[in-house]
Length: 85
Picture 1 (cartoon, one colour):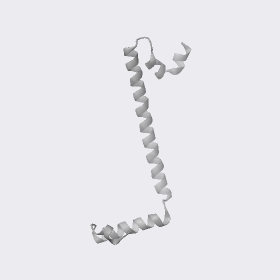
Picture 2: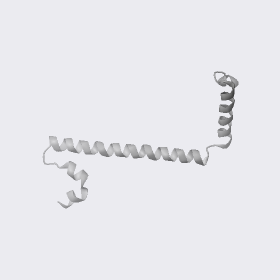
Picture 3: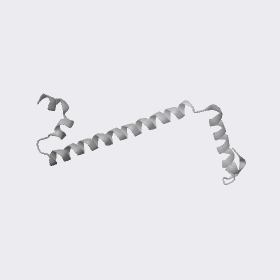
Picture 4: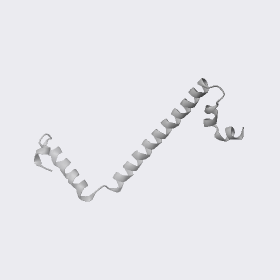
């Protein structure tokens, strides 16, 4: 990095930032960095999964209202019971 990249920062913050940045690029990500990344991916995946599930159930309820007799909402909520009917 060039020194002009740190001109806007106070001297102590710029030096600290440059040390952290060079340490990261010298040694790569640590186990802690990978652990935090894996948790972030897990949380985002869980949130997307819950949102998709809720959206599908909402669409099934709308279809049941628009097309009586389809019973999509009950099928999606209790697939084993719907299969046995």
